[in-house]
Image (cartoon, rainbow, N blue to C red; front, side, top):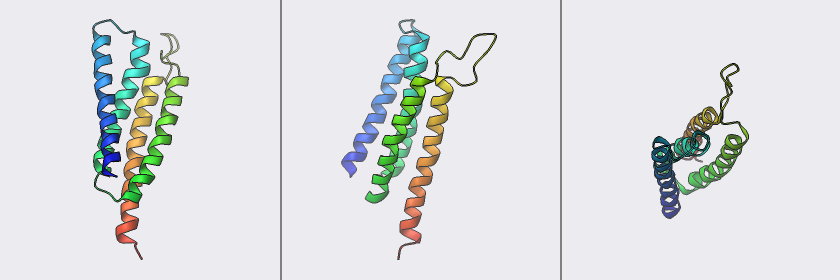
Length: 132
């Protein structure tokens, strides 16, 4: 189990590094704004959330880890799908869009973090406080 947790943490660190590299290319005008908004920002937000929660999950029981990792797989797939289907431009000057890829990635990362913490703490509470 510790090996799987290390892999999840490693993947999140790689995601953060890739997002920083893409940020560097965007700042030096080698990357378009659309690619940056659709790839780099969502990758960064999700990787940071995944890394923080994976550090917390390192100290929980194996059953809780397995339920969390199943949730994580599905959440990441849903997040990727939503970021890809939502337009990345944010509308034009006359009609700005309230929902774009960046806001969806921030929302999904924040919800992932909160729901993951609830899932981990509830699983731990069930085991430690309500065990038979």
